[in-house]
Image 1 (cartoon, rainbow, N blue to C red):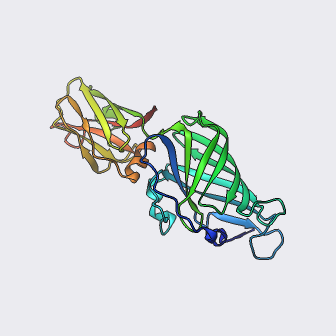
Image 2 (cartoon, rainbow, N blue to C red; image 1 turned 90 degrees about the vertical axis):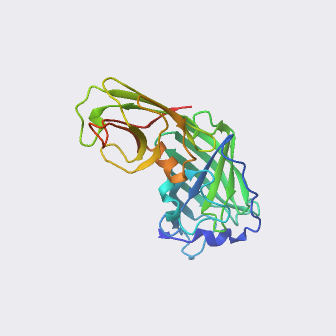
Image 3 (spheres, rainbow, N blue to C red; image 1 turned 30 degrees about the vertical axis):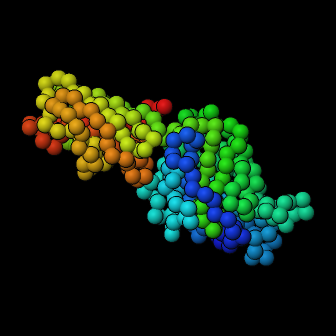
Length: 290
């Protein structure tokens, strides 16, 4: 087993795909595989080249659709902060077999796994074309309605960066989120009888529409959305409109990195009071569903 620059074969690509529609209708996910660390070739014939019968395995990161531009990014590290899932692949090279089409490269099984959304499994031929279909063989969680074919669109000349479009599933990244605010979640914890609730909706333009309500003996002078996982304090991302007991409004569009943090449970709401200026009640934002 050795690492192999599979992308050299895919330099046959001569057609760039047209821009995709805005995030909103079908599900779209961008995938990036590092060819030096995320791809291993089983060179069964030992000829130091990609040839029929060779096996391969690979893994990479999944980011929201539209994060990787047409033409690709310099490295997967450039979009790693927006990761929302992990991609796995295994298969064999079919290029050169007598019955293979001229643009057939390999037969593959793919898995797209998301901690929050579920998973999609596909199978089919990887081609040296700019677009090609994959057959959906299984799906779970919020992606469970995925069926039929998915469309693969190559984003860079190497073929290691591509977009998966799933027409049978409406965009799952537009969904509902919620938080329960308590003093116990503050770092360090705050002894208070106050509490709060928050409901949020991620919109098609990646903005967040929110409503935060507090109850009990609390008069907050500010409430914010902060960047940070549970058990840690983080910087303010957005100042919320309203107060001192109810906040309502819509944030500017989140960046892909902020959207990934939202889906991964790494943003929280914090309500600040004179008695506890660093925060009296706090709630980690969690995904509820569509």
